[in-house]
Amino acid sequence: MNISTNRAGLLGSASLAFAALSSDANAAEPAPVRKRNLKKGFMMSTFPNGGKMRWLEKFKLLKESGFDGAEPPSHLDQKEILKARDASGLEIASVVAGPHTRSMSAAAPSIRARGSDGLKQALRDAKAYGASSVLCVAGHVDEKASYADAWKRTREEITKCIPLAEELGVKIAIENVWNNFLLSPLEAARYVDEFKSPAVGWHFDVGNVISIGWPEHWIEILGSRIQKLHIKEFSRKKMNEEGLRKGFEVDYLEGDCDWPAVMKALDQIGYSGWCIVEPACGPCKEDRSPEAFVKNVSVQLDKILAS
Amino acid sequence: MNSNFTRRDFLKTSSGALAFTALVPIGCSAEPAPNKKPALKKAIMFGTVGVPGSVLEKFKAVKEAGFAGVEPSSHMDVDDVLKARDATGLEIPSVCCGTHWKENLASPNPAERERGLAGLTQSLQDAKKYGSSSILFVLCTVNRQVSYRDAYTRTQEELRKVIPLAEDLGVKIAIENVWNNFLLSPLEAARYVDELNSPAVGWHFDIGNVLRYGWPEQWIPVLGSRIQKLHIKEYSRKKMESDGLWKGFDAKFLEGDNNWPAIMKALADVNYHGWGIAEQGGGGTLEGLKDLSARMDKIFAS
Image (cartoon, one colour):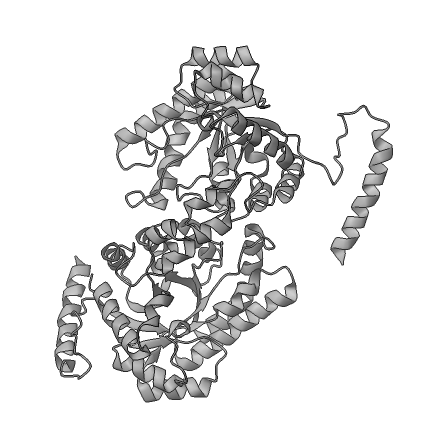
């Protein structure tokens, strides 16, 4: 009951805000009225090739296209990002530590330490940018690092970073990716809970589970552990007919993600906050200018969030 | 550095073991040498035997191709199977439940779960009659309607109902890892088995089914003594990427991405000495069966 009252309240204020902005020249294709308290973000490593576009230009384009925030990688020049953030008015939703933290399952302790050092830097970057969490990939299972090894080693490395995360007030949000690890939603929840720290949560990638599961089931199980969302599409048809990874080469709303079911599951756990697009479809970027691509993704995201 | 030392220690131990072997009768050496191989017996899943004819004729073809055992489905004519078994001398190490794909044990519909449980019960009874030590059982299918969490809770609840019978019969319920979107982690698989707290529940490990996201040689040490039976299956990650997920299974034994020497070593390390059951395409003719059998010999010797 309470939830419906809240939603009705949100609806009212969101439509008001939209009405005030609707004279904006960029609103040529008016977005559906937002009925949820969600913010639109863009993962910068999937930004289309903009040639020599600088951070400020990219951020401005995102802002003009209707995004509220960006998710940059860690280890950048903080001053440049802060300038671009302030000049564009975008927020920094999250910071990606993934490329560093993948090494946290390596056999060599020195390489694992590089992972946790990278995670610590990402936490500091996030603090500087005002982001509430970092995206952390918990290692990588392969022929060298087994599932059991990854469990033990990544736990150790992440544990090292928890005091800093708690001190900074920035959460370590573990993402489900194709790293052959934490393949079960029940196990993912258990992994988080075993840290016994409010500083550890989940960065849920919707599209990454469709090859082995249903995102709406993951959302129900992960619940309040979810700090951020990656919005990604996936096609089971392409996975089966063209190749496993070809499943990602599909445009938003044309794959097998059941967006109404996903949004319903998010409503049920009371998720509010960032929905960060990670457009993984390479071919979708080829035929369009960066401007056209980003604007199109923004419209697609509006449709998803309204579904 | 440490691992080098360990290896040298191993070498020393094994030369010591040489002297030791001379003193004990063959077959009694308690400590196997480091380069040991698992002693595997060769069987084939009945459903993959495509030669035409009666159950007896199929068993005969299996025998002629060099197999020592066959894994029939449940719900077959028991007399037919027993006659074929006795006429050929094949063993029946395992029975594959014939209802687990049709009747989802995690279905939200209690009537369907009941039918699933009845199929499981029948499989255990068939296995007892054939002298099999375990049955192959697929727990359920996770799908849009059946969530991972529901699957976990419901299947454990249903299994608990049938465990007393399995214990009485002395037939183990061996859960197989298949593409049912459930128990995708080896750690979780082991935990699931242990939570049932019964010696009558174990694992039927399918080697090829984990290659899409894992490595069989890593599952084997985690599952360890829970492994009751093995399905020997090939899978090609290359075809998975270039042709489609399911196309990965279109690979002959030894032509896919299984690292058989590593798998054989992992099996020996956990002291698995039992049945290796082929579940592989190509068994449509006697020649095909012979080819499978010959390739399995190479796999077991790798």
